[in-house]
Length: 192
Image 1 (cartoon, helix red, strand yellow):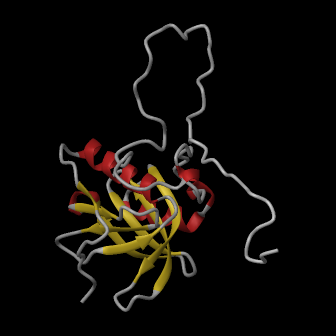
Image 2 (cartoon, one colour):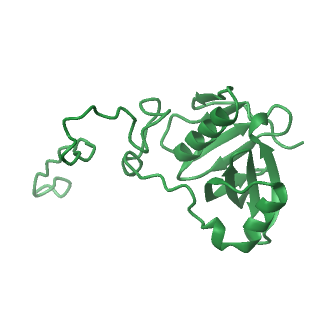
Image 3 (tube, helix red, strand yellow):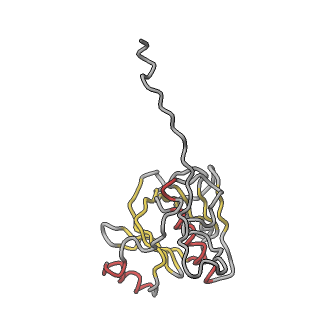
């Protein structure tokens, strides 16, 4: 008996990820809505996706901004009330260290808040965002390119949702649409 040979043969067939079937209701014969699924958007087919992220529902506020008085105070001082997205992310510094931050996206700006001290670290106007860079791989890295300031390299498990929300927010406030670059190699400017 060969000890390197398994005793049983195991055959594994890959399962195809299928979207959930729509429920047949009274209006099933009506004209179908051609809007994509919540997770299917700008990046569908452009990059490798994790299986869990294919048909994930997009919630938006994962922190509960209305329940946090410090964050609501920061946003009200800046004049923003409508929160489109809020979640915890990892921001990479110039030296490569990781810092925990809360990313809040509103109608007009991006906010990076220190969760330990509840201090606003950076405010980026959406009009200043020129380009969003993501990798083709199923990793969590993305960067926000701001030509007038230094760029942000961040990591989040919800990077696809973040990119979608930023692009939709910029489109709604102006007719400009930022470029979304999907590549395994991109340049960004770190804080001098």
